[in-house]
Image (cartoon, rainbow, N blue to C red; front, top):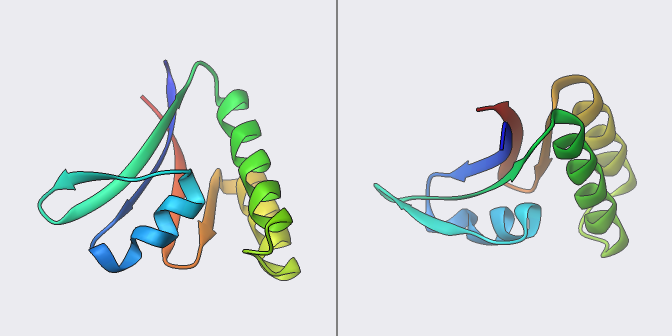
Length: 92
């Protein structure tokens, strides 16, 4: 796997945000929580982010403005947000 989409939150208070954004969470030590997903290509990672954004929109977790902002951010900066969680695509 050459790319990952990763989200890290600093406290337990953001667990719901990272779980909804990424589809799960894990305790990563030091009081941090997060989740990551691995992909073979950047295109696969970006596609997953776009699909996850659609999923959040369909469940009414995002406003139309947030949905559109995420699409723009995914396509230009390979990042997206939900509530208090932030995810980014990284090359490993």
